[in-house]
Length: 234
Image (cartoon, rainbow, N blue to C red; front, top):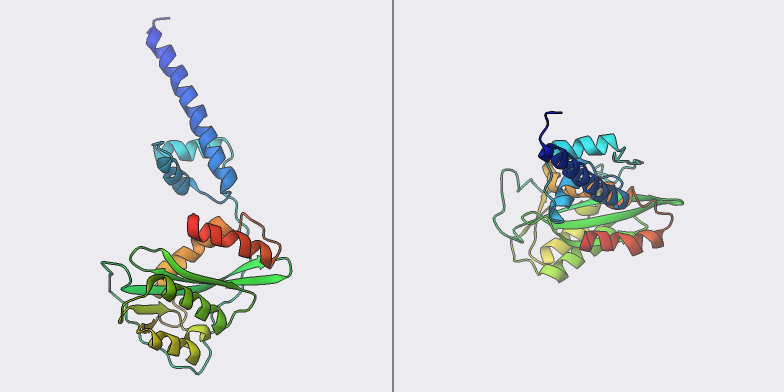
């Protein structure tokens, strides 16, 4: 046929390689149903498999390995209150080490009987969760529990900035007093502007897409048992 023998074997090897890649991608997508090609690519790299992103996108499309998400929405920020508001102290600031800026936020997890609420505190430099709390109620007790966990774990130096939105849970007297007691400096974003707390918002999106939507939690106990493992280990 005028075709080199090596051409046949090269093609067969490529097909075999693609099969192995598809199997690896399918395993990832089965564990994390919401993963798109970017996160699949990153996970493959962690597994020591380097694949061109165009091939990953093509294989996922051809084999129906597309992300699936389920969403319900509920407001977690109530900024219509009379509590004092901290100025935005992190605008334009880029931390160059840990425990210089902490960012905090609240999200919710839908269950059969309503919602479970999760408050987190992250180190803005490493983007690691330094403290979190899970509760059936969305009030200052939730955010105080997350703050207490962060302080116990990291013992932040005086002057570390604590940044959040303007929600009543963060503006409450009890929360402001807790910040002052450990030398944390309060900071808040502009009203209704999630970009002012982008790192916390980004983490919450990841938490919802990867750790909440695929799980279909039914009860508070399900959330309390499973979500900490995702936050701590994944």
